[in-house]
Image (cartoon, rainbow, N blue to C red):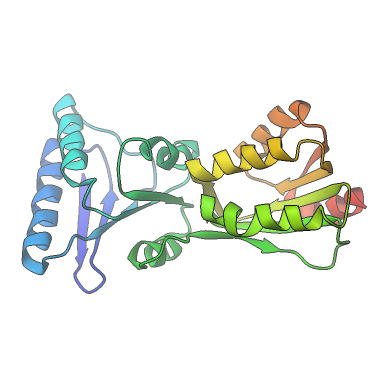
Length: 245
């Protein structure tokens, strides 16, 4: 079942899945979106807020969903997905290969943040926020929202290259707390590229997070890195700083 709300002023359609999705749900969604387009001569963006990962009640519902995506993915500009869980976090990266709309994931308690992003003209849902007070050979930052390729190209990569002019080796402190959302597919590629380009330029990397998949991925890739990598709990931020020193 879908609860569908229309906000004409912000050109936004908000969808709340509350149970198994039916063919009729997508017929209603299609009709309301098309009516909005015909009435206002503008295509609305979508905000999807789900407490759990939605599912279809039948094969017909799945086909209706696919038909809706096929008919609107080239005209809907932005889609924000709000929900907790690994499936929600990887969905945008998967969908980026198949749809033209920009799709971003936000944590379950970030509905307002998602709404502000989806109604904004620009696509800047996240950022690396620098943490001050550490030696200049330490690049320390908090990861906020959904990180895109833009955040690497405009901030993190130039910062690394600038610091390497002053130091032979760098250290990294990365904090992922409740403000962290996810990475886009482009951002994950830029992260890997940054790591390969500067494989031998980092001596220590401290990951501070309680996010399960961040901790797991960090430990999984740790043996492939030249740098020492250690994962800390959020309440061990001071310990992480001491370890880097």
